[in-house]
Amino acid sequence: MKPRVQIDIIFLLSILTFTAVFYFFPKTYFVNPFWDDVFNVIGLILIFKGNYLRMAARGHKKVYSKNGKGLVTTGLYQYVRNPMYLGSFLLGEGFLFMVWPWWILPVFGLLFYWRFKQQ
Image (cartoon, rainbow, N blue to C red):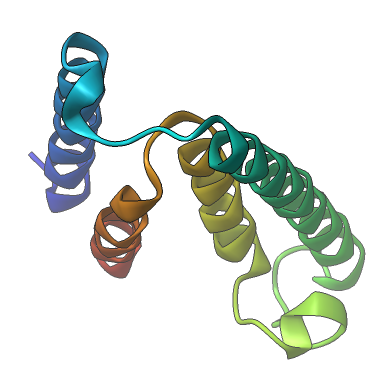
């Protein structure tokens, strides 16, 4: 089995485990309605920005990649080597802000890095 697939399985099992713990033990962390609303707004903004970044990067690459034979170094690609990964990361963070407690973000960051470092 490819290492990338093994990491995906570990990633999925981790998500399912954390979700089950938070679902069956809702008192595991403190929830404040005000901060919950603030994190929902932040999460929604991150989701929109991540989705926009992915779409803009894909559209720019499609126009400027010369049929996949050239390295794109203009637009978003002059600031970030792969803006689609950054967009995916922002999408994931947005969902985490909306669904899980804020302190899970570093775990997501490490798992995301570990997953895409393998490619």
